[in-house]
Image (cartoon, rainbow, N blue to C red; front, side, top):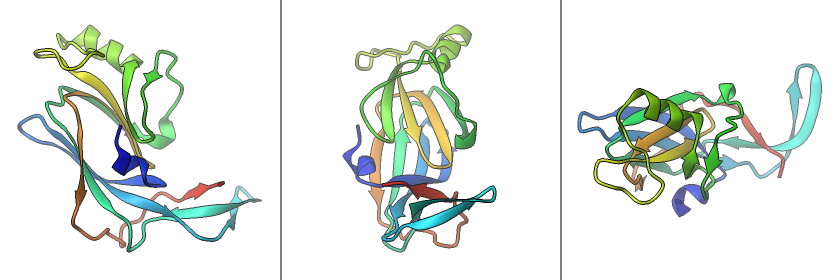
Length: 165
């Protein structure tokens, strides 16, 4: 869904803001896969070797804007579990969802209509944004991804992530 987002190894959350006009703005920084594998110590065991992933000086920063974000569910990535109703669209980090427990909750508790076919008058589509830190499910208009002209914050502590390949 977003070639810019899909061109990265991964993304880390910097911030999320729900603006007064209803736009949800999520700022992300690119995680770059390191050049050499390393062994990882986990609960007394040595695992790997894996490639470390971290924010570097060459990391890109992006803003993902969800216009008219009518409903949002955000949670820590470590609490993710299987949603038996979840049906995802195409994309690595940002994609549509055509069914989910989130959608069923929103439609049972509000008068909001979530569609899978374009954007009808007053309706929203369901989108899913995956980062290393947080996951977002959003009922909104079509999101826009913008490359920002700013340097990554190298002083921010990030989730430690490793890639096997």
